[in-house]
Image (tube, rainbow, N blue to C red):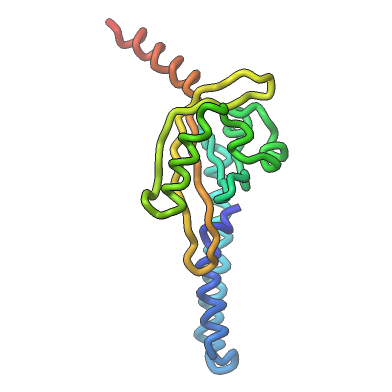
Length: 174
């Protein structure tokens, strides 16, 4: 996990090596940079993995074609599907048919560069055929050196959120 974010830094190191840096002449100054980059990558992977695993908010990494690349446990709970199943699906496959066009239009604006992110309320199709309302927030990531492009989606279950709001109203009403 996390390769999406850190691979640009490693690509820069590879570019330096490919640009004529002599392995023998620069080895004393270049080797620490490589070791540092590897250590940072390892640290970042561990932090990113833990953030995904323990986040109470559903987080999905989705490619520009709509395929789920990574999902956290909260996303699996929200969609009521195991990670392996979600990675065989596109977001369009689990979106209410009436919500696809609006979402597609927003995705197109991100891909064209008109906007960097969007938010919307939409419905997801559960395995039993029922629908679950959710608040979706999507941001685009474009790695300049590697060319990798994907979305980071954060999703809040509105059924759960409604329960929390109702409890807060009851608790603080007096």
